[in-house]
Each structure stands twice: as structure tokens, then as C-alpha cells.
Image (cartoon, rainbow, N blue to C red):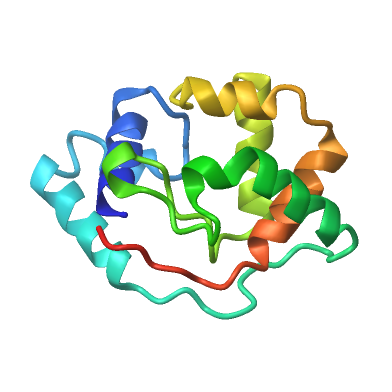
Length: 146
């Protein structure tokens, strides 16, 4: 969602979200707010390749159960997200990216995490997170309306 991308890029730029790889490309001396909006609009139009960074596939039923119980109420049953609420689309995301982000949120190293998301992932074990990220990595790409 364009709203989510703009929020995340501006959070990196403002220091609320740490991403050393992205910062040089969106820092204040490089891009304007309009540039960030234009990049976000462009990115929303790109297709997600099939089989995009899937996990090992070893505990999918468990991951599906955790997703249904803990994630679907905000991110949607199909991982479509909710643009007005800034809940990102999860379908089509890479396994390693999803796992890293969930761990960072749980450990408190992602400073811009939604407080509700922190509550959800805090009690999950590493194997819970791995199973959930694996399940998410295999969801069919669902694009919700912006």
C-alpha cells in the first residue's frame, strides 16, 4: 500500500525505523517528500514474483494456525493488509524479510512498530515466528484496494 510505503520510508528518514541500506537513498539531502510519494506509487505497481523467497515448508499447518489466530484480524485472511490503518500487505513477502521484521519487533529493535503488533509477537517463540513467516511467504499475492 502506498500509505504503508510512505510511512516506512519517512520513518527511516526520521530515524524511527533503522534501515542503513535504505537511508542513503531517501535521506533529506537526496529526496524530497514528493520523491518519496512517487517512489511509493511506483513500487505499488510492481508485481511480486511467484515463489518469492519462500521458507522451508516444514511447519505450515502451525504457521497457518498462528496466522489465523494472531495476524488475520489486522492483515486480512489473505494477507491483503489495510491501507487506511497502515497495516501492510503480507502476501508475497519474502520469508527471511518477514522473519527478521517479526524478530526485530519482538526484540524492540524496530522502533516504529505498531504497539498491537508488539503485543502479538512478544510471546511467540522463534519456532512460532519461523512457522508463521514460512506460511506468510507462501500466501498468494492479494492486492487490496488502496
